[in-house]
Image (cartoon, rainbow, N blue to C red; front, side, top):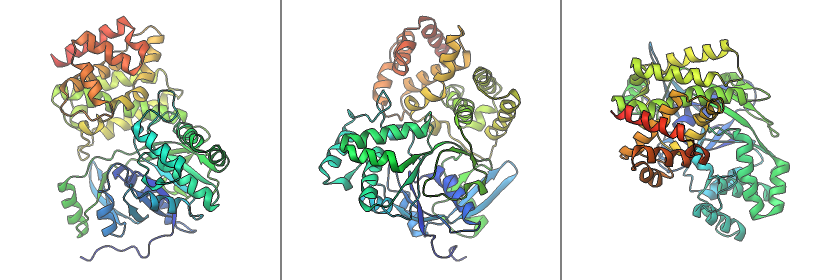
Length: 453
């Protein structure tokens, strides 16, 4: 069969940073669906984040790729055609050129929580050598094409757009940060101010930061998945994406230069994403982290395996009970979402590896688990499931062989102490006051011992 074709690439009106599987199953898919409607289509110029690899096969396929949508009853494929071009994220010169285009109205981001390089107070971490290097280059205005951090790339893009007088645009972060729109606004605006007060003023008057919550389970694609796509389509797609049928996107904010009609794909535009954000972060992501850290102690490697274990399922249900007490949503809404999650977690056709979820725990646990844990402690409770998630993280860190975290070496070293000392150090790392909570430290240490036998 000949390679698929979708005609000429759509004009670039959107830019994305973080060219990975999730983006292609989510934002790119929503834009693809939007393009099926009336009006001018939106093409995406996508840039890789951590590595250049993903751009190579996509360029060879003219940006086309298949989604392999795996439902419990079988597989289906969908050819996605919204990606007009793909770049190595290190090509900051190309990045600045597309951001400076007046046709570009939207910049979406999927760079993980760690990618924003935030300091303890929420601003840019100027003590991070990479951030400091970017700041120096931006101040010198020479070598700005050598930006290596996400905040540095964004500020370089803003400087180029301002110089081109290309007008306003919207930044749409799609990572699991609390209040991700304001959080990203603070990081990049403060970095811009450190470069040039006039640039920061331009950002304040021309750039909108949209808050979002996003959801679609997207496991890593395997060689076997590629074979399935080839069998179903007759085409050897080098870069297919595996995903589940469920998808959700909730957004709040302004789009001063317009946007695709993402609502055609089911996106919702609301005044406040916070209730939806908390529901997703605590119920879905919190349960994922619990399974990722505690599930391997029972020999499990995937979400479906773990949720199929009655013990692990009881842990998740207990966690949901703890989290639900603090959600500003009706019992009916929460119950429906829990039922959907059980169905999704148990989907045997989605191989969602626990090791993949376990990455970057120091960035994820403070927003997935700690909000519930600290609320429970304020009420005088010792929440067993929240404690189990942290005890499981200690077990994960003490094993050490699969730890991938921006502060991994420091955490692994802290976790090698005796259980009580490790529990105190790890809790203090997440939140100093937690390390001083003697009752909580003891509970985490005791639960760790129970998990590892």
